[in-house]
Image 1: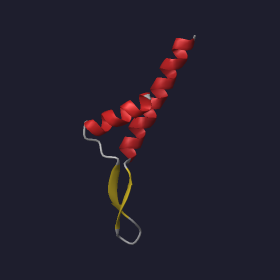
Image 2: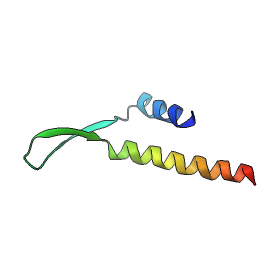
Image 3: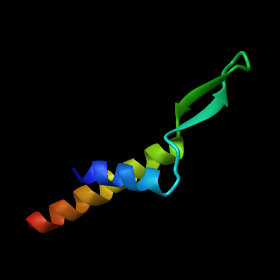
Image 4: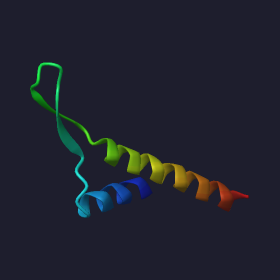
Length: 56
């Protein structure tokens, strides 16, 4: 649930899910935005840390 909220929050503030990047042949293809993925991973990491501290 919290991850979904963060996902929507990032989209709301203009971070794109996908970016276009050239493949080996020079054709553009859509891939996951590494910045978007990193932001979600960082959120999960912080959320887990906070949740574990509450359990202690």
